[in-house]
Image (cartoon, rainbow, N blue to C red; front, side, top):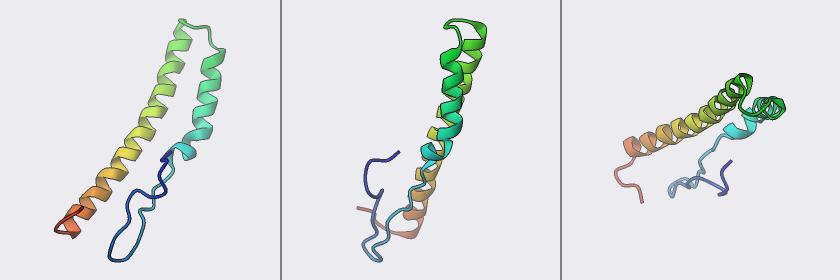
Amino acid sequence: DFAMDGLYVESEQGKKANYPRYYRQALDKLSKAQRILSRRKKGSARWNKQRLVVAKLHEKVANQRMNFLHHKSKELASNFDAVV
């Protein structure tokens, strides 16, 4: 998911961001969908349908990450005058 130990650390309280592991939560669904895709004949209509299913799962994880980061940055911006 995220290679660093913490997304950020507050200087006042020393709290770290509790970064949720969205990719790891979706790993079971994603691996099953990719296994199904690998068994389809490349270029067929069923392969294209399954390819879209896998792409949607990846997009969902990306959107969850972006949403978390957006909420965290908005929270920091509204609570503090300066963020460095």
